[in-house]
Length: 251
Image 1 (tube, one colour):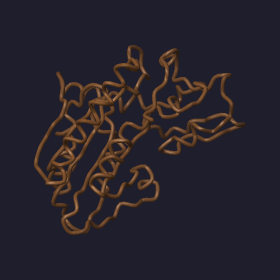
Image 2 (image 1 turned 180 degrees about the vertical axis):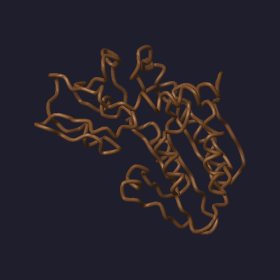
Image 3 (image 1 turned 45 degrees about the horizontal axis):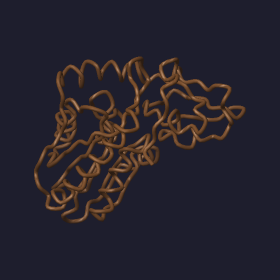
Image 4 (image 1 turned 90 degrees about the vertical axis):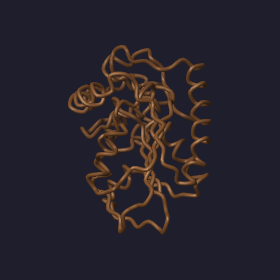
């Protein structure tokens, strides 16, 4: 059983790869949350996995909220997570361990993989070059394949890219991100908009509706930037921060 979240496809790829090789079932966290599906039963010896991107050096708030409400018939014997990041993960492992411990569960294994950058919602943040993006994807594929046997054998391990100033990034900066940066009022569409509805289709939180054929953001955003990156004509912008920065989606 693997619960995952992804906005631009990086974490979805990791989750799908793990599910394929572990012969496991995928559950999309936003969909499960919308349906209030929090009760599950693990079969004997079944592993419990989570896959998610790193947002501001920590797990996305919606992932932690889901973990908090998740209910299992029996205490899981082996829990792991895999996370994707543009650069570093900060104290993600400690944060996730704490969330599990509050439920009486223990984390068995975790690993992080660098994937192409997707967050460009602030000045100074930019996408990787095409060459660097390819390098990250190839390294990520190798990392996942290296760790799959460890998960199959239920090994205890931690392979995280923590980085410097981890506490500062994962707590002070992350708190600011969750408080101030999850502001979808700064999204706008330009005259390029062709009213295709792709932005509403890909929004994992179903936060976008169409009014007169154009997107409207409704105040429930996790800042995955999927709407921006998936737009076929690059008609969506976030304030002035995204102008001229290009787009990326895992394909």
